[in-house]
Image (cartoon, rainbow, N blue to C red; front, side):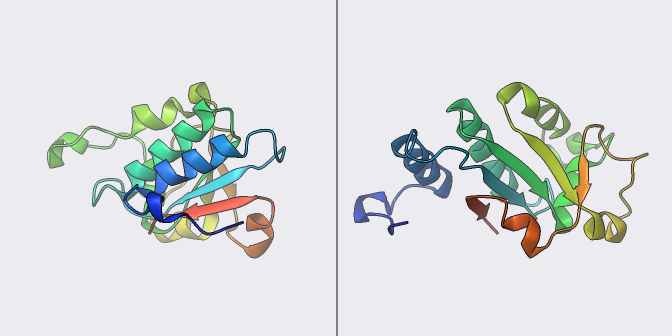
Length: 146
């Protein structure tokens, strides 16, 4: 892949990725992108930008999977009290991921153990996996905005 052109330097990361994906439609098939969310849901905007990127890719029929790791596994926690920090809950956004065309929502097993997340307190429909090189090799693009 070639480096980004100078004109793209002012764009945010997800806009660049969307632009690249539009220009490569039809060039390579099955160019699935893995978007990794490793920040807690309400600490900054990095996770929301990653989620927007995934939804935008899916809207352009680009296959995309979300992987939650580190503090990011807390995005998947049921019954969040986002109003306590004057924000909207991310649960509704994530529950809409399949509707937008996101291929899968995955979570790192070790991070779940570290943050006390299990099937009882995690949103349904999440695939548990081990974050390793073998997993990352299955994707044409891996994006981590952290």
